Amino acid sequence: MIYPYKDKNPKIDPTVYIADHAVITGDVTIGEETSIWFNTVIRGDVAPTIIGKRCSIQDLSCLHQSPNNPLIIEDEVTVGHQVTLHSCVIRKRALIGMGSIILDGAEIGEGAFIGAGSLVPPGKKIPPNTLAMGSPAKVVREVTPEDRKDMDRIIAEYVEKGQYYKSLLK
Image (cartoon, rainbow, N blue to C red; front, top):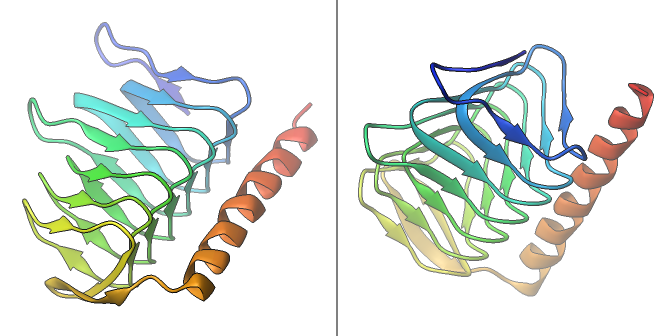
């Protein structure tokens, strides 16, 4: 379901796939070929949420903000199942593993990989092209060429899956 909130309406590119039972409300912008999966909630009722192109926001994720602190997700980001993102910045081509929580003011660098079940505390900066995991998340190593290949595969597969499911709705 897509809802306005007060004078704010979601701006969603026509190529976006939105699965059943996803909820998107308020000041939310979603870019081309992004997919929003089953039972995800994206609320833009406190500050803006901006989601770039070719992202996947997977099943049961929750995206929200604090006052005057937007949530920004750049292009080709993978957000795994059941992730919570709150007033943080996720840079291009990052991957946020299943069940992770990224809190206010945190920034995930370009091409970074956050391991499943991690907690990135408020204000924490994860450098580009690193793997961080744990609670609280700590950098454990650089992203390897094998990691990058797998991350790129996931981006492509979710764009393809989203567009396939979208084609069924026509």
